[in-house]
Length: 329
Ligand SMILES: NC(=O)c1ccc[n+]([C@@H]2O[C@H](COP(=O)([O-])OP(=O)(O)OC[C@H]3O[C@@H](n4cnc5c(N)ncnc54)[C@H](O)[C@@H]3O)[C@@H](O)[C@H]2O)c1
Image (cartoon, rainbow, N blue to C red):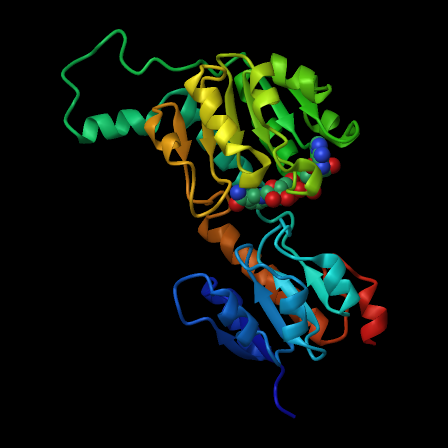
């Protein structure tokens, strides 16, 4: 019997590909870029499983193109706003993600952005490289203190909790907001307080976003929210770009409504509002929050294990629509 046929939409760390190849015939997008829509539609056809990325829009059309034989779309990300899970369920296709293994790596990057933005590390480094440093200057690159300040966490799940925990060494007050209070968060971060979104925005020196991208969270931070924030506040976004209204962010920075922003994600990736690049108090990264060698390897192995389970008619460990399995059996 021929081995099941698995398609991977972009090259992943080698251990993940090796694991898939132990079990399946594996084909990988040979190009070092995101597949075009046409390429995606063509390449999912006739596969038993697909490993997809957050840059692949997996909607009804793609699921239909994949066809009846396909058992799973294993997403190489914890966020799955790129996949129409309801349509996949309707089509009898399992969907999985990679939760947990990237939690600390993403939280670490939220802190890297917080430090870099508060102390203008990137602009100061550029200044040195350009040979502009002429000697110690009392007014050069004055930033914002971090120790003892208030950290506001929007979304108290895995990454929000890990980000908040790391503030303990900086003697920070932690406020958080979620759809409901989270006792696990409060246990992990002693002294933290659940507040409504408005209070969090008004009182925080640093606002760090950790909610998923949903209809309800698109433009969660827009003009009204920037007006509530402190003029000295810094916004950190390592979640998804469209959660922040980027045009409103530019306005808020221009009008001095907030002090700075650290962004791992932008509204229209890979594009971003070009004016953001003009601010020394803005740090923008190319969506690298989970990009450590260890974590990207673990994410790949996790996606591969989800595929292996699905193609053995078992429940994938990180399945988002387990009910589908009953129909596949
Ligand atoms: N930049 C990156 O590379 C990167 C890496 C990992 C995760 N992420 C993003 O981070 C997100 C969070 O990941 P996680 O593992 O912590 O997820 P999680 O599910 O553990 O936590 C999300 C939290 O947000 C809360 N939430 C949902 N809707 C909300 C709303 N309207 N208002 C307030 N809170 C709300 C949920 O109740 C939950 O507590 C992912 O969905 C993903 O999009 C980005």
